[in-house]
Image (cartoon, rainbow, N blue to C red; front, side, top):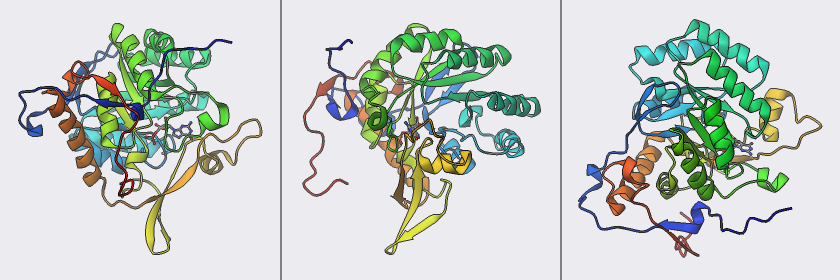
Length: 350
Ligand code: 5GP
């Protein structure tokens, strides 16, 4: 047994210290980023925020709404093949960037087969994939990333999830362009509770970004953002992309019907390894595994557009406070201060 003595931090443990700046307004800030990915050599230009590939948030509707603004969506895994092919072709005709939608897949033979068939029908329409498992530390996962890289060298591959620098490097060397970082911080995730496994998300981002950047790779901070300021902290810590689930739940563009309770409207939101998801797709929770996600009702929030403006406004404003004219400069200009209190909640939590 070993104890790591250095302090590891979460978003709630820090604030970003303001810095003297020549910027007068947040309208002077550009939060687009450009990358040329290490393996695919594909050029990316967009706002590096991605809706999570969860049933509720990884939808075609969300992709269209976010795509208009240069953001991305990792589609959930459950759309039928023909709908996916049609959707990816429509991105081209609607002039949306290829990075608008990541095709998500797990590492089962059936996932690879479905993906190969779709690639055969839409080879030029798909440029981005997200290879997603709860635990990115298995050899099988690394082999799978290698296999997708060898079969489709032109694709930008995002792969995860992991939380440490060693495996981030291994994944990049195996063919990932972007490593997805986060085990346990998600809003509907119960991994930490069920297994005791995890890593404070801010430190995971700092350590994995350092490892990835050393090899010319990128990372996507996945999970744990609850307010726009958390995205600013994630970018400040070195994240190239940030993935959001809970912050995008409850909107028109999410899947699922409205539910009424005591005169108020809600939408269902659940973790992808929750009992709810497993019952929907796998006919129940298999005997050898426990559910590591939960289901919640999120108050209905209308179109995602309003939330998006809040999020982008928050990130732009953070850049103004530290004098970063471009999002790219935010990490360099970030000094975190450790705090014991974040918010004044005397009038409630909102
Ligand atoms: P959020 O933005 O809601 O805090 O986090 C979203 C992320 O939570 C997802 O992108 C995914 O990595 C993770 N996640 C989604 N469903 C589950 C689940 O059922 N269990 C666990 N452990 N993580 C989940």
